[in-house]
Length: 617
Image 1 (cartoon, rainbow, N blue to C red):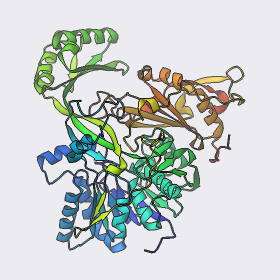
Image 2 (spheres, rainbow, N blue to C red; image 1 turned 120 degrees about the vertical axis):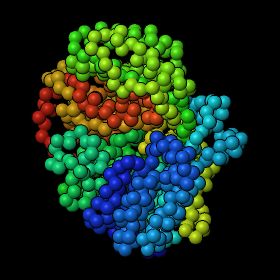
Image 3 (spheres, rainbow, N blue to C red; image 1 turned 60 degrees about the horizontal axis):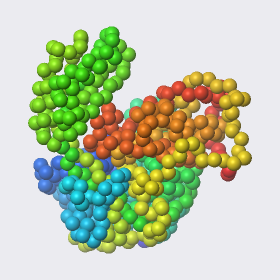
Image 4 (spheres, rainbow, N blue to C red; image 1 turned 60 degrees about the vertical axis):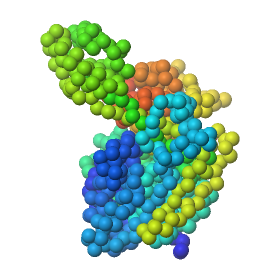
């Protein structure tokens, strides 16, 4: 094939299963693009697709993708726009066949390929017999003997299966569980003729893929400084212009809402990450080497990124049944709210039997001025215990409780929930295959991997990654020492003012399995120096009391003027099983921005200067 010289314009039209349906049409009609991608999968999505497949074995994929293709497939074929998605979920072959069927009804005949090999469910006994224990990455508990019966088990594949499909002339490539960034890595490697060990180029594509994978979160969605965006409503979806050297420019179509700035891109880079070494199936991208530059309106340049050999293991996402749960919310109004909350809790324990009566019993109080809410959540293997039994006991307290008692969200039906079990498997145990429309099966090259003895060779990666094994977790109780470096803001010499952290700092947070990450960034060098030295683990624990007794990892990314924290165990068993009001930790960053801090007064009115990378320290 002829190697492309100009950048490849890769446009994303989906950040999750349920994202804006019109986005595909907006991206195809809004301006020139070369590749249309869509990310539909997360740990919870795999469980939802399993449930759909129980109702209809022919499904198990993202139905919304078919609706989007009705709008744009003809135009994509006419213009030579490639389509690459992970909408195949648990059944990429089924979705590929369905798309061919629907296309034929419209007189279209696209070359549709799919990538398989990620589904390990049927292979679990064989792999376990060979000594792979699929130990839980957070607890170390082996799958065997845990009593867990896996419903899904999918390894995170890389982008080379996509590359092979495009090299074979595919118009549409449908994947199952590939890493989110692979949707960009595969097309970029195809267009630019990269080799499996072009580490820096691949790392750049992973970085671009991570930036655009969550759609409008890169163009102003969920952005701390949204009030600075002139048109924040209906933001355009992002485009990555990936160059042959792996560098890229992040942009969007002209005339669309939102904005692409160093700030919006920084926010997305910090989303759901852990270590600065961002591990993907094809390469380790050194996020601590990422540099951003505002090239012009809605154009942010991402410089070359250092890459390292791929991990020796692949992350595996397993899901299993957890049981049944139910909840009831008591509204507390008027006076004596603390006494009313105590009364309600005592009444609940008396009526339901309290924690001893259920497998799990959790109370959560939310404050809201003159109106608080006390939510009790119960879990149990028996749907009757968690369902009608719990509801009957709660309803029986209605006339015997505190004054003004009324309930929200109470009912007799318990709902089944699943539990995410993150594990890993040696990369050489997983064989990805590209399947063409005529049934031809093409082997997918494996990248060289890191030395298995490396402490980073086995760490998990991706959107919903979990932390390394406990002995590898980097937990700091204060910033790493810097001998001879003066404190730029000694409290004895600098005057401070008590203001919310968000006066100066942006934040982005999200879930990482049962953990939560929150990244904070500054918009100038002096503020970053203060952030770096002020916000250590003890201060974070003081500001977020729920993290006080949990392990916390802290990482610095000076090029982004950012500090990233991972709070281990904050979300329990992950989003599907969490009893948190914010089970994906989406609001954690904004909560932290609202916390008061002692800020040097000379930073408060500091003018915002153009981004200039920090000098080497």
